[in-house]
Image 1 (cartoon, rainbow, N blue to C red):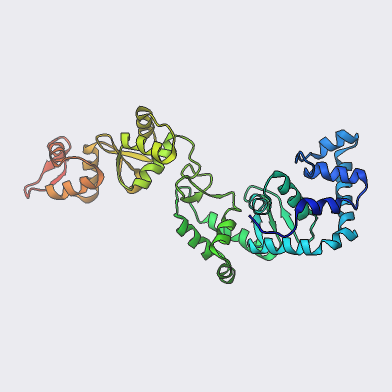
Image 2 (image 1 turned 90 degrees about the horizontal axis):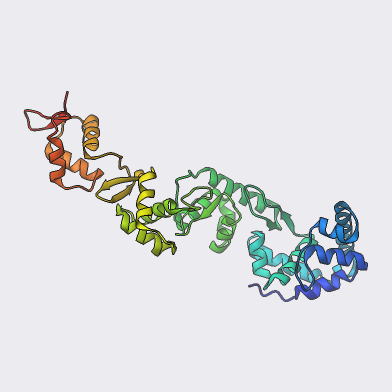
Length: 343
């Protein structure tokens, strides 16, 4: 919470005093400056007064300009300077919800702060779009640089990428102007990351493309993926279900979890009930399929070499591998003891 010296509600009350009763009422309703703290739409205010939404907009804009030209506005010069200093302290550009959270203690206070920001000439509001959240800034050059850096970073990420917070921050700094990155602390850089709607953090604190199921986990499959990835090695489907409940506080029935693992191409069965991630280099298929693929790629190999290769792909016993090699329809043993694909 900010330690601003002024009280937003007292300031707005005096600033509104420069207006006619109707103009005061329009701004009060529009920005939720009354005790109910409820912001009205242009249409809603128009219906109350029996005028068009465009006429309400005109009254609103004229009222704001009238306040900016009033003696009351000049009296609050220090207030707007202090507010500008606070925005600068937070990085010159900041997501609206974070700024209001920092400056207002409740919904009513936040409405008054929003009104003061709208009224103050140093502050510019950029509306939410496909790439960024609503945000405020006081330095256009800094805002432009930060937004371009976030856009470049998003373009450098694939849908499957997941980065630790440390790695994400490092990549962000690489995309920023060196001097600007050096001048701002980690908290500011973190707030800047929060501007983007294209980049987000998953429940395990890993960063990636916001639209990726690895980040916006929606179902058991996605939570299972995160659980196995965090574990770092193959897991039994029962362990996966238990891990989902422990990590994400979500109920995961063992049978349901197993069915989802079977159907999702991100997972591959590598042993009896054991699943690994396909991205780790494991291939699908039974042991015979793995044997055929290894011999097709590498040619004839010794028994021990084959066991070593298969064990990289499957969690199976050595004897299971040897038994599968005895299928003469698929494999043959050469005179030097090595094995190859049957002709």
